[in-house]
Structure formats: C-alpha cells, structure tokens
Image 1 (cartoon, helix red, strand yellow):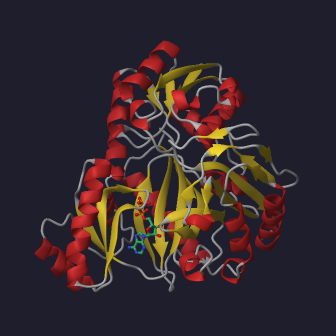
Image 2: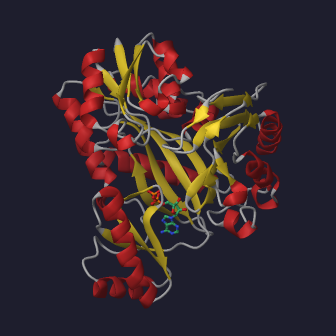
Image 3: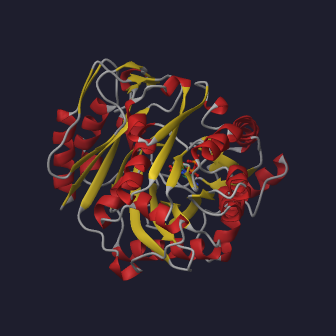
Length: 448
Ligand code: ADP
C-alpha cells in the first residue's frame, strides 16, 4: 500500500480524499492555489504546497506544477478527484512516465472512453444500446442534414470532447441544425481544444440514470447499481439518488450488466460511471463514460456500504476487489442535494463571499460532505458547489422527509445558496412521486 498520496484537487473532494487516506493510514499531500491559501481543510493533510495563482489553469490544472508538488512531496500516487486534471489522459501519461501511480484508469482506457464518439463505437461493439445517431463524426453540413432526416428531428449536436453540458445544442429543423453545428463546434473548440461533433436523436423527457462500476487489475469488474440524476437544471445535476425510482428490476439489471460489458470491453480499471438516458418506455441508451470519481458518488456509498475512494486507492495499489458481484447489495434509499453558492432567484448567478455563519445538519442517516465552515470565503474562481448533503433511509418517503429536516437545520448565512430551491423540489409532486425527467425542473417553473 502507498505511504503518501498527492491530492490534486481542492474543496470538498480534496477533503473527502484526505479523510480516506487518513483511514487507510496513508499520508496525504494537498495542493492549493493562492486563492485557497489558509483553507481549513488543508490543515487535515500531512503537508500542503502552493501550486500557483487563483486561476485553475495556472494552478490546479497546471501539469508541471502539480507534478513538482508530487515530486517534492515524495508521493507514490496522485488522486485527481473530479474536474481539473482528472480526465486528462496526457497528465495521466506523465504520471506514468514519472513513475507515480495515477489513481484512475490507464491513459489508454481513459482516451478510449474520454472521447464520446469513440466510446459510442466501443459501446456498439459491446452490444450496449446507444442513442440513434451518426455512425461517427460529422464532417460537413450536408452529412448532418442527411443524418438528421434519417433519425428524425429533434436532434442533439454533441461535441466529442464535450463535458459539463458544454458543446451540446438541440436542433428542431434544418436551419437550426446548421447554426447548432457551428455553435457546438466553436464552443467545444474553445473549451476543450477539439471541435469535432456528432449527432444523436434528442430523446424527449428522458431520465438520466448512471451505473457505478469498479474494476481491479486482476480482471474483476463489478457494478454498484445505479444513480438517478434526472433532477437537473440546464443539464447540470441538482439532486441525485439511488436506487432510481423509475426503473423496473429487469431494466435495472439489464442496464447494470451493459455497463459491466462496456467496462470490460474497454479494458477499463478503477472507478468509473457509465451514463445512460432512459426514455418513457424504459428503453435505455448509453451516452458517455465518466472516467473518474463523480460528485454524486456518496449516494452509492450509502446504499452499498462500500467506500468508493478507499476502493479507488486500493485498486490503484494493485489489490484485488474484496467482494464479488453477489456481495454488493443495495439497501434503502440515498438522496444527495448539491449545495451551491448560487442565487436561484437571480438566474443562479454565483454568490461568492464570506460565510458569516454555517451550521451543519446531523442526526440519524445524515451526511454533510463539505469543506465550508463559519468564516470560510467562497472564492469566485472555482465551481460554486460548497457541499453535498446526503441522507440514507429505508424508504424514499423517509429519505425525502429526512432531507427536508436536514435542509431546515442547515444554516448558511452571508451568501445565497441553492438550499431554498432544494426544499421546493423535495415538495414538488413530480419529485415526490418519482416522476422526474431531465426537463421537469425547467417545466415546473421552480427556477423562474
Ligand atoms: P456532458 O458530458 O456535457 O455532461 P452528457 O452527454 O453526459 O454531456 O449529457 C448531459 C445531459 O444532457 C444528460 O444528463 C441528459 O440530460 C442530456 N442528454 C444527453 N444526451 C441526450 C439525448 N440524446 N437526448 C436527450 N437528452 C440528452
């Protein structure tokens, strides 16, 4: 097992990894930007190095600085968390050439699945259903129009390198399609340095359901059931839960098996998520693989009792999975609310600033994963998520009630947060009945 690990991230996920290291008896080395200097969670690491100015591109994303911190920190492995360098195959390769283990898949598997178009191809080969669409990348406008007429409007123009909802445009007709091609490509080129695009049929009112998998270096691949992330605003997840309230046991089993098939076919190792969308008839379609730990991993941890971060570290260190598929039983219902420093009343504009007072909820079945505290200043430089509130209860009804209770205990004074919105969603009939799809939040008027 490793003696020291570099945590190449910030905020709640850095804290989550530092905690896992401590439990495993591994020393953690944190990194921070000038904007995060003095953050309390850094005190929980065994050592911490400044890697540059506030801007992510100059610090958390800057490969040479992160590698320097790893060298000076004398670590054997790097945990990238999510975002920043976590899905950067080039960084992954550099770690390998520096003989530092990257806690995640190999650079090859990452590259195979990181590109959505190649991942689709692999999924087709593994007999995993994909959304009807173009066979591969779209090279010109006329080809796009031809494919769109074949699959039928509405269509979704997607960037192969896209992520975080960027590089994606819906088109209802030929004219809109031509504009969408241009927009999606330009946006992806600017954000990811790769403007290549493909087409998918736009599935109306789908659910977003994803399967968590773990794969070790000894050929063992298991799934840890699914998470439903349909409660989204503008393709950004707000609430996640496990199990999905809208799946029959047959669909659930078929989907989880498909995910394992794809992961095996890709020669993928460590933790990963296979994302699907599910239509009203419960047809499920693969959309992408997230080759990293995800924000919403705690709901899976709560229902399965398996610590995913510790599992990632053990897998990277070469240990075989200590359980087989039949040992993984999902118990009860877990729900997670993302607490963002945003103002839901002002079109979700970021609300950075000093938290004058923070009281974290607690009690039976409540988990609050956050690096924030009274006196903490939310930086305008990074993602606005300041914490995740997770509950675990025997039934969905009890989980909703427990979440409402926990949200009422959570006090964050000094900045605006998404807490009031969560309270409304949790009381909304569509959510209470488990009838959410990815568009229900916008249609409900809750975010107006
Ligand atoms: P990103 O990597 O940017 O998050 P995804 O491919 O995961 O992009 O898609 C993000 C969200 O967009 C999904 O959760 C779903 O809500 C929606 N989406 C993606 N593909 C489709 C599709 N073919 N039809 C309808 N909605 C889709």
